Image (cartoon, rainbow, N blue to C red; front, side, top):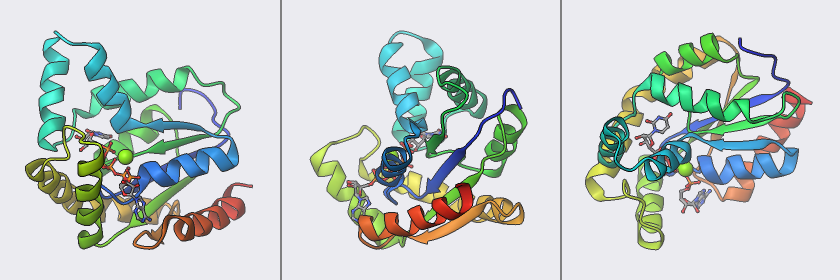
Length: 194
Ligand code: UP5
Ligand code: MG
């Protein structure tokens, strides 16, 4: 581990499961720093226009596939360096698979808690569709959405199992209203981290 971290929460779940929504609530309630890994990558793409590596990554993300692991971890590390040691952190949308989980632990640290937002496929689709109408992220088109859902389906079970074996994960029924979901998360965070 690069440096000691008092509290770090990872929030995982399918596309549209509410990772961004719930992570922001956690950050607000506990005064944690919020890092959205998807946002980190999207911002980097916007700020580095004519760069071969990042235009390739832009293409990857637009089709709904995962960015290269080492690039992603490098971006996370750089962001973490800007945060004072004593501050808690909530990371939205990472890791996406077991390999990423392993290299996060290896290169950064072991998280204190992994929040898994479990949602039915039907709900995920509904929410993404609705958001696509309102905002229109480049990867909110039908094809990319299907890809994102498929990748999630493929990677989720082993990833959840990995964190389960380490006793780090808690699963929440994220089909419910966002305040109901957050209530349960806050009870879990209160008892696990404080
Ligand atoms: N909403 C939220 N909660 C609700 C609730 N309980 N009831 C009703 N509505 C609810 O929520 C989605 C929508 O649903 C919103 O409109 C919200 O208001 C509503 P949101 O909180 O945005 O869900 P979230 O899980 O954050 O969905 P998002 O689409 O952001 O998930 P993705 O996993 O697809 O997106 P992310 O930004 O994490 O990643 C995007 C891409 O980046 C990936 O596909 C990948 O290409 C790349 N990436 C990597 O390669 N590596 C990484 O480590 C991370 C990202
Ligand atoms: Mg999000």
